[in-house]
Length: 78
Image (cartoon, rainbow, N blue to C red; front, side, top):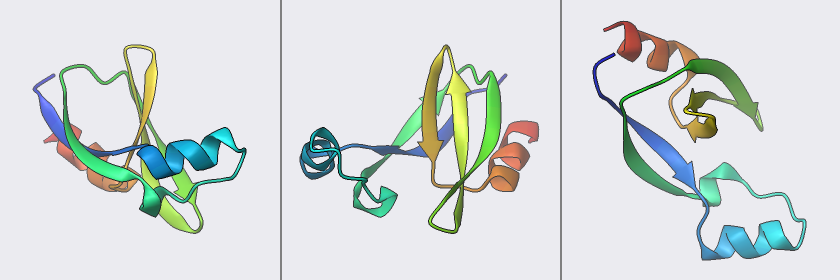
């Protein structure tokens, strides 16, 4: 697989504190960073508050990408 750069959600100080308190966080409140993947094992659709995202599974870890499943699949298939 060629390298693929995707926008991935990351917790920040604010969302981390809310998460520690057991409060659900909105993905829009998270930081969005570009990440380069060299190995993607699986992608699955992910729906949050009616918005379509993609779960990216890589090397035993899961990431949430702000692109929808169809967009990520097209990028992978090139």
